[in-house]
Amino acid sequence: MGDWLTGRRLPSADRVYELMQVLRVTEEESATTHQLWQDARRLQRSIRLSS
Image 1: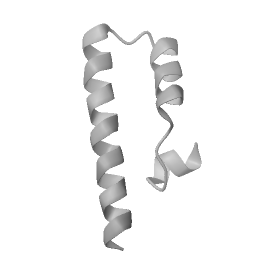
Image 2 (image 1 turned 60 degrees about the vertical axis):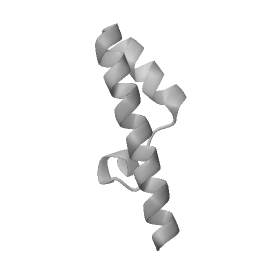
Image 3 (image 1 turned 135 degrees about the horizontal axis):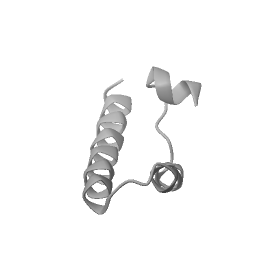
């Protein structure tokens, strides 16, 4: 989890889903969270490719 907080790694989609269940995230919040997670993954990949 420390790597998540520092931005070195992103949690897996499964882990994000588990966290959303525990936090009782609404469907609307879930859709937004999913989109943000996908955007972060794309950004992380593009940063790795440009390094």
